[in-house]
Image 1 (cartoon, helix red, strand yellow):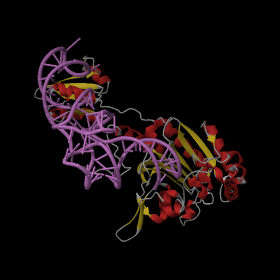
Image 2: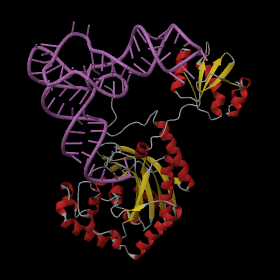
Image 3: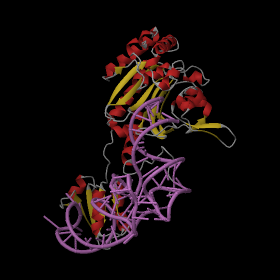
Image 4: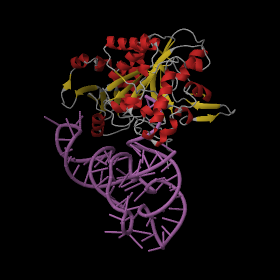
Length: 407
RNA sequence: GCGACCGUAGCUCAGUCAGGUUAGAGCGCCAGGUUGUGGCCCUGGAGGACGGGGGUUCAAGUCCCCUCGGUCGUCCCA
């Protein structure tokens, strides 16, 4: 019996990994284009960081963390999300100035796996720390928009503002009161959550409170929050980014304030359709014991994006077939100049019949098949058995294929 | 965490309800034939402790219990 991988973990391997590689490369590229530098933070941190950052009563922290003691009894946790670690790193290096950083890596949550939800999953994300300007919110959303569109995820953008310390308190109290009045319409698992986190109920698929009678945060925004949200909307309008404001959009992590947003796939059939989410977290730095530092960012789930936009796997450019006495070592020499030119080249490593080699060529979905016989090489495009001349090869950037240049 | 369904060949599954000789199919894979050196067709071959453990029985892939995985919903979230 072979050893299995733990529940909810898995392997991203061929042929699916080709698409992963593409998407991650796209991310490296695009986040750089927007001026976000790479950051790599620890995959595990002191448990306290997440308790304070994400929120001690939050379910992600109370029920879903992989927490363990190290050899000296210190409590460590696998990161359930990326923002807390980035903010900690920012504060640790001085906690001043502007940071625009992008990350990509695995996150961990102890949950029941299902489509689009695993215990180890991969997120990409950015954090723009040190700016309270609405321009930062808009830039971050613009990056998300462009990335999702490049990946090919059809989606809808939802935005909202949760207000700040000034105005959200009154809304929360009124919301608790309203929920308490319609407690009979709530599902059994949420009736005792009204006091703790009434906003959570807005997300529930079973609770049926009368949404008309629930207080909308928009009625409670203070002047600065209203202005900020107005600027964000204006900025999105100016960029031609379509969105819908949703009074019911609440996010799961406690550190959010003001702007929140979420991209929901419009093609995903599963119940896990949120593909990317983020917002502003102006209070997070203080929660972690630093000076007040504003920030805004997002995280997106690569696994879910690729479920929504599977794409096509890319094949080889060239597959070499060796006749007669031609060995894999000979083919390797023929392949070298092509590989130097950046072409994806493959051939059979084990001795196989010519027929088997051609079948392998077909499987590799190579655009060209090269047949090596003695010191000659004949290139074929697709299945028509037309031999390509040196001029043709040159046209396709394959002049290295001239037998004269053989190493 | 809760609920439902499902684990038999690399993949998709039949066989389980009415327990009984060496456990099957298609596809894929390997070798050979045919072919315009690879998409079709023909022949042969490799490949399974039926997820794991315990129990009932003369006999368990099949019945019972437990366990581990998977899928879907709920909770939660990316």
